Length: 62
Length: 178
Image (cartoon, rainbow over the protein chains, first blue to last red):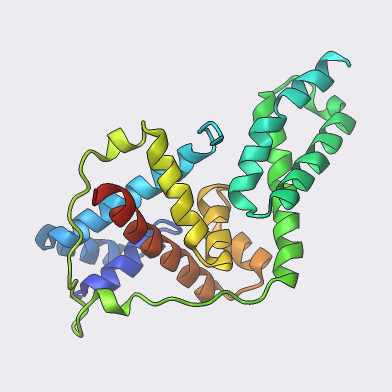
């Protein structure tokens, strides 16, 4: 199945909340191999999650 | 003041900070922490020094936060909706494909980055922000989030998607674009 970038963004988000079916994961990998924009998007989603995990440990702003 | 009490009190500032991230209303955050401290002092025996005090208190606080969200979502009006159609052309391709963020790990070492992140969180519609923080900050599963916010599972996915899309754009503009 060929995914559009818009569909990829939805699947990347869903994949952060549940395990995607095998076929979807394969389609994503195929898409990432040819699409730099979506690869960057996916990495940015990873950083967003990492930064939220650290947010509570930041000293409060005065 | 006995030792347990003063140790619990010593965690108050951290807990207020933790609650404030999820609950925008500082009074609601203070209330949730107060309820947590009262419950903690009453439950000293169940703590029994087994685990890390902060972890134990945070666990109680999470329940108090969810209670507060439940009360607020009964009162708050529905959030305004935002769409991301404009980012894609009619075939669903990026109009302006995301560029790699420079030195993303270095950002995580900078206070100013987290200030930008908090500002971006404040800009989200209330329900979107609640769903996102319940997921990423409290670490709840989506079925719990749907239940607590009284929304359908589909709407829940949409809220999380919108939050991530909006935060990505906001950080891109406010931090990585500079």
